[in-house]
Length: 102
Length: 102
Image (cartoon, rainbow over all chains, first blue to last red; front, side):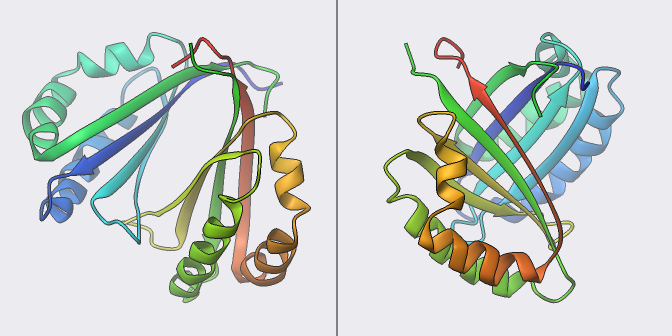
C-alpha cells in the first residue's frame, strides 16, 4: 500500500515576457527542493498554448511539507525573492491523498 | 465551501520526436473533453526540460467522471486511437478531493 502524501498543484501565471526567465529559476528551485527531507516529487510544466501558464506538481511526505518548503532559504530567495515578482498571479491548492488511493 | 471533485493527474511520456504532434492532438481532445457534463477542468502542460513529458490536469464532478471520459467517442478516437500509440508510457493517478479542502 502506498503511504499518504500531500499533493500540491501550483499554477503560476507569468507577467508577459518573463516565461523563459521563470523556467531558469524554477529549474534551480526544483533541484534545491528535491533535497528537502519531506519532498517526494517536484517537477514543473508549461502550457504549450498559453506559455505564461506554468504548473508545478509537488508531493511531500506529510501535511506540513509545503509550509516547511516555504520557510527554506531557497524558497525565500528563489520563490519569494525572484520568481513571484515575475508573476501576475498564482493559485496553489494542496490536499492529502490517502495511503490506499492510487 | 467548495464541492468535492475527482482530481486526475496524468503523465504522458512521448516516443521521441512525437511531442509536437501530441500537442496538436491534446488541444483537440481538451476542447471535446471540456464539453463533457462531468468535466470541470482540462488543461495540459509540457516539461520545458524534458519536452517528451506531458502532464494533463483534469477535474470531474464525481468519482465516475474519468471512467466516463474514457468511454466517450472523442477519447476512444483521439486518446486510444491517436495519442496513446505515440507514447512510450503513461501514468495516471486520480483521487477524490473532499469538499472542504482547498
